[in-house]
Image 1: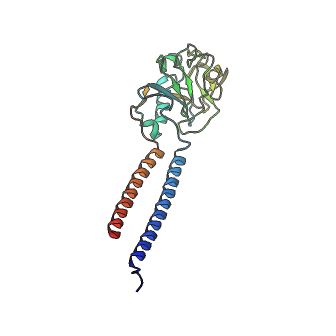
Image 2 (image 1 turned 60 degrees about the vertical axis):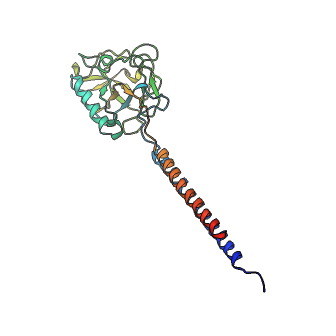
Image 3 (image 1 turned 90 degrees about the horizontal axis):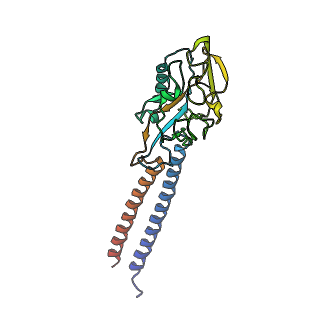
Length: 262
């Protein structure tokens, strides 16, 4: 009489089960990696509210050019501050910062450099994370010099805009001959795509009744000590937890199979 085939059959069945388990496990990994990839792509193209180059606890400011158009007929700087503040806070990511936004502009009574505050040593970044100026002063590298480090072309909505902007301001931050709401019905403009003095004072005066954009700048912000994870990071955490769960199930299953065979 030949040997009992039952032990061999049991081992073959167990081998098949393990192969099927491994296939399901690999399939899960492929799908999980695809999910992570989709999460990374979905995060692309959004505005940057915390410059990645800064360490936790660092101070900084953000600057943008408005998507919307405004006239320059008011002589009250607070009207323009309200305009950029409302526009910034219409975007969830900017409203969540809990800051006040100010207009980079001058009226006859208020110079832009005083309206926004110098805040010496606090760097200014655009909404793509590019350094625009080392602060809002008029020393080398400051906002109100003959040059800035990056153009202020990014809007609160993430658009790139090469456009004329109401400023009424000279390169040093003082009021230009044609201020916001000034006499004569004309206002000096800057051009957002320039990095020289023309970003704020292009030497072009336009009718204050026309619709032009504004520059908005935040008050001081602080990089959080525990930055909020990016969507891709969150997906990786979920993936790690799922992998741990499946690995434990496999180990548990192998232990049961070992006891059965023995």
